[in-house]
Image (cartoon, rainbow, N blue to C red; front, side, top):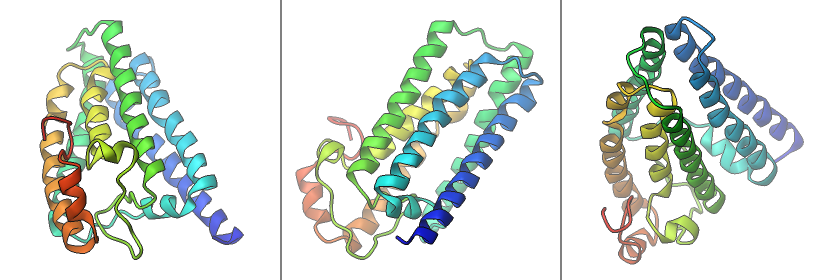
Length: 227
């Protein structure tokens, strides 16, 4: 990657990072009607500080992967439907905790909130281990030229470790934001991810050499001993 390309990539990543931070903050604090929402501030730190460090890591060590992860246009129509449904869930799921804070619907103990933030960090750590192991872990479902099957690291345990981390993050998010009721909004996320995995595996079996053999070697897709 040339110096100019690296600079453009860094600029695009920074712009998306700032935009994401602003959007999530607005979704949380506007419904809350106050900036005095400590669960919201803590969550922003727990989520975006690791994102910033991982972004810097990828800029230095694997800019090609970072460039792949900037792509958001899904080629598979089924994946586009799943992403659209997930986006609705995420928006609603971030708005409800703010309303919950404003109107006092939930009263979660501080220990529960902190434990949930810990699970969010765990989920993101699994995500990081996954992308560190697999330079082709793009955001969209596709197979690039020269892509190989990865069987090491978390991929030796389950075939889709990134989605395991994602589920942990999403299910812990409402509790980390102090909302019991928002948890029910995020409950469909695992089912949507299962649908995404089923379609993704169809693409990988069809287009990625060696993936069928890998499926025989690593039996479980998402949760060891379960599925």
